[in-house]
Length: 159
Image 1 (tube, rainbow, N blue to C red):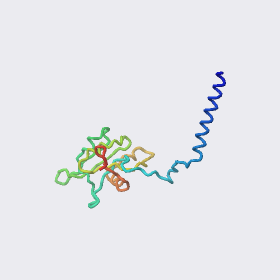
Image 2: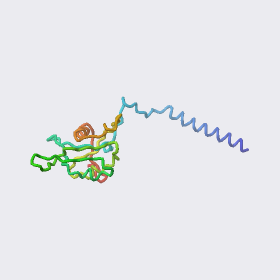
Image 3: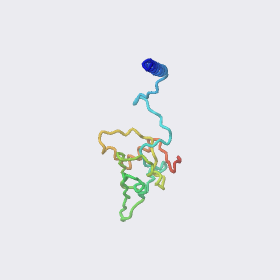
Image 4: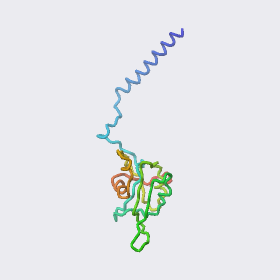
């Protein structure tokens, strides 16, 4: 009696499995043939944080206040303000580096920025052979912002 129940259970399982396989065989595949085909990301997807550029002046919105660097939980952002000939700090970053190899993509730097200078881009194709190539400076981050659909997410809301 137990042997017959085991045989019936096995046959039932095989039939159910084949039913699923045959049902999916006739459906249109959902495979994306990357890199020929690309996935359209929804607005607000988190890629690399990028430096926002003022479209009127072409300058960065960043004032080198350093709040983004202080908000970063892993300390991957380095900000140094430009120093003028008079020895006073200017409100523009001389050095702005972001080490994406350790970035958590947490958006805390964007939320901390009071000057609307950072946005999360949808730029995700960043593979490199050397990790040093994933350390971005201010100009590279501005270029990423120009080429992507960046969005500012603060308090869970898209701005």
